[in-house]
Amino acid sequence: MNSSVNNAPATAQQPARYGGYFKRDVPAPDLELTSTNAGTPMGEYMRLFWQPVCLSQELTDVPKAIRIMGEDLVAFRDKSGAVGVLHRHCSHRGASLEYGVIAEHGIRCCYHGWHYAVDGSLLDAPCESDATRLKQTVCQGAYPAFERDGLVFAYMGPPDKKPPFPEFDTYSLPKGTKLVPFSNIYPCNWLQVFENIMDHMHTAVLHNHMTVDGVDEATAEGVTLEGFGDMPIMQWEATRNGNGIVFIAGRRLPDDKVWIRITEMIFPNYLQIGSLVPTAARERHSTSGCTRWNVPVDDTNMIIFGYRHFNDEVDPDGLGCAEDCGVDKIDFLVGQTGNRTYEEGQRAPGDWEALVSQRPIAIHALEHPGTSDVGVYMCRKLLRDAVRGKTAPDPLYATLSAEGESLPLYAQDTVLHVPELPADVDRKQIMELGKRVFEIMRSADALPANERDAHVRRQLDLIDGGLDGAPAPRSTSSALA
Image 1 (cartoon, one colour):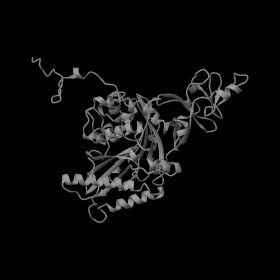
Image 2: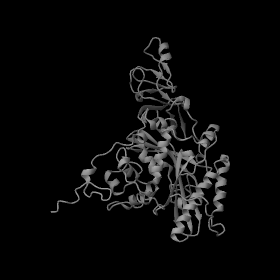
Image 3: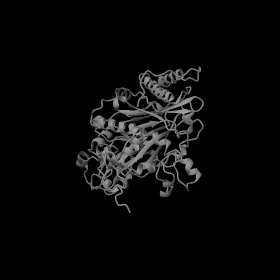
Image 4: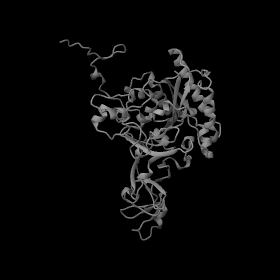
């Protein structure tokens, strides 16, 4: 037997076959981006924003223990309807308020009956003959909280920096939109789930019959995202002064049509994506189908909290199902949650399996990125700049949010009639068309909220070659690599 089978370390020119011996060491994770505990750079950055912490349906007649960014908390709705998010352990002797008794106003600790308001004020200490001094000196840790369309939000940052809650156009457009809350639980770091959205190329592989023998037909179809099978022509661009990023994905469709899909992420952990049903690839123009916050539980666990958007535009055929959305469930693809057996996940893997299996915290130093990973690496760089304070605020976000005006978003799906050209030229045409659609979305920023949608649709009509048979005008801006 030949014992000299490439048992030397790899070189820059020649990787080591059977070289596992040389790759045993696992570097430390990138804690600047992945750790969100109190006092960490990313943790303090995230705490400057309102974060969802549970679904409203989880607030019943007993408190709910939650953990957010490494902090043990308890959430409840008192009998007057006010929502509280408090530190979990009572300021008296540390008993957990998850065993507390919900009162007309606030919550009582089960151990000695100390009674706290939703703002943490001590209202009563029944074991004390005179609780006056305690009421003046004791305050349970508490965070501002409120409910919106079935999600409970809390602000966990410095009180003097609390921002208004940002409203986006897509929460109410088109008319009749219904927001349905959901959560998906992932036992891994928040960042690998968040940045997965900028890795749009995976949809053509993971969600395109990536199954093995033995999986039943229904399951195989369930993990497949119809219409996403072709490799997209990708572009990525920073948005909002570097406080966000979009991908622009272009796909050639039959009958001289091009599908442009744009998804936007706003830092630190918010995103909206387009329609989640096959009609995305055939509708003229539609807005967001899903809102997500990627919320850390701790460094090795996270929860996606979000809204499914239901309306006649993003789901004209009624393929979505609001009843299938809720606590750790969503009506979008099998494999978005860990509710299957290990073997089922092996035979028909979905996002949950792919993301969780990267390790509890993905190790960036061991990656070998390709050109398809440009968006992921852009996302990380922009996040790092934001955490380090190098990113100027988004003036549009600050101004409109402070005035109570809803904010624009760029997530959308558009299908345009564009005559097909020879392969290489057509690729460039699709890239330029994608950039043009993005520019149109952005051109509505300065308009009042009630004028933006009509403006975008008028501009899209002008570049739709199907209206008069003319090809779409070519963008004067350069396409991204």
